[in-house]
Image (cartoon, rainbow over all chains, first blue to last red; front, side, top):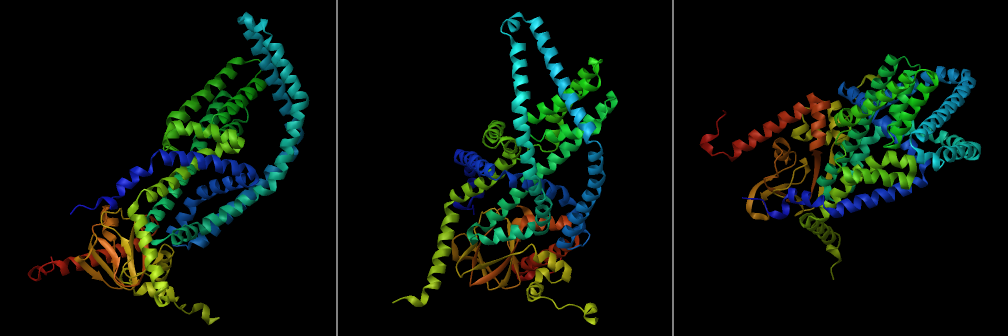
Amino acid sequence: MNPPQYADAGASRSLSSGPLVWATTIFCTTLLLALLKQALWLVVPLLLAIVLYYALFPAVRRLTLAGVARETAAAIVAGGFFIAAAVAMVPAVSWLAGNAVSGEEAFFRYVDTGQRLIDRTLALLESQFGFLERIGLHAAIGRKIAEYGGTHLQEHLTAALLGAAAWLPSLLLAPFLAFFFLRDGRRFRNFLGDAVPNAYFERTVYMIERVDTTARAYFQGLLKLTLFDTACLAAGLVALGIPGALTLGVMTAVLAWVPLVGAIIGGAIVVLVTATDFPAQPSIVYAALALFVVVRILDDFVFTPLTVGRSLRLHPLPTVLMIFVGGAVAGIPGLIVALPLAGVIMVVAGTIGGIINDPRLRARHAFARTLRARRITADLQP
Amino acid sequence: MLALFQARKESPRLATLRKLALFAPLSRLELRVVDGLLHERRYLKGEIIFDEGEEGQALYVIISGRVLICRQGEPETGRISEIDAGVAFGELALLDNAPRSAQARAAEDCVLASLSRVDFESLLDSHAVTASKISLQLARQLGQQLRLRAPTADRKPL
């Protein structure tokens, strides 16, 4: 006997990915991003906590595999990580304190080089294309840079430093959140599963698992991608003889977490550092730039499909749209969280869409409610 | 001091789970792990647990009450079996990844423990011994059901 049509799960699944679900996903993601903008101090530690959770989760899993209780495993792994981080921070802080002055000098040296590089490039462009000289491109951009460096930079730098100082304490939330995610993640999943009516229970359990799988695939993929990027860039920069190759590699790989903008800033930093350290050897600057471009191409066409890949199962068009919406609504944090947020909302909206489009499930729920109401009022009949 | 070395008494919840055939061979530690994965669901008499043809995402074990397994929408004429406390059902959809082969309804008020497909698969990965004990119990239960459904003359061990 063929199963009745109303009970066909495949049919409801195909309905669940309709245009309404897409529209709901985009609307809810935008709304959440707008709300997140109001609580950015919480978004950054939350994002770091999620990255930490997925980074430490395999270790907790290994310990539970060895027979350690989940709570104990979470405490051991999180405790071990925090101790290691604290031990690593001590020499890092003392090194930073010792090199603060030389670091400041280096910063201004890189800024000067960058300005000279822009001057030289603009002068070259004007000599090649006469109309640029006629419209006074070099002079206009020079004025803008001077103006920005004079007043705007001071204002923005002060605001940025004050903002960072206000955010720093909230960053301490990240390790605590990560520990509780590791310890109570499963309990929370069970709590959510237990909260739904019987008719929707199996769908909800499936949805929770898909949300977890999507987020895990994305964030673990992102961490692997960062490792690949760091390794390739650092190896290339070492081969070119550029000092601080590992730091540059880590910096550009982490900047790549910010879609579109991150890669441009990372490339600019690599060029700036190389141009400053090797002012008389433009070939090294071009080689560093070429290396950066090659790593980006490898990243886009090899590493990303291997790591983050299709974890979010989003079409390229809404993907790009969500990146722009994220940037417009919540700035840099919006750019970073827009994609994983949209991926998770897509799963939730798809499941809710599947339930709404499944009259049988709704009828079963209504029937169960009637049964309960009858039971409750059984002795109240006149 | 001696209390430290004495075997701790099993909690009522674990004692209840141990009475279920599916979890009977598990040690206390294994039972605690499985308990963390189970969802307890309560159904009223007549309530549908799952429909025939539905995508199965979980298996159920009856903690108390009875469950009727029947053809879709035919609780009287399409009755397949009625199962009692301690028995698992809905496991076929998990084992062969196929849609539910029959409808399950609460024959009386019942309390069920549900183990989702994902949790069962993660148990296979993280606690292979525990999962293999549960799988063996499931296989035994399926064998028993096959023997009961086969004609009397065929009820010989293979």
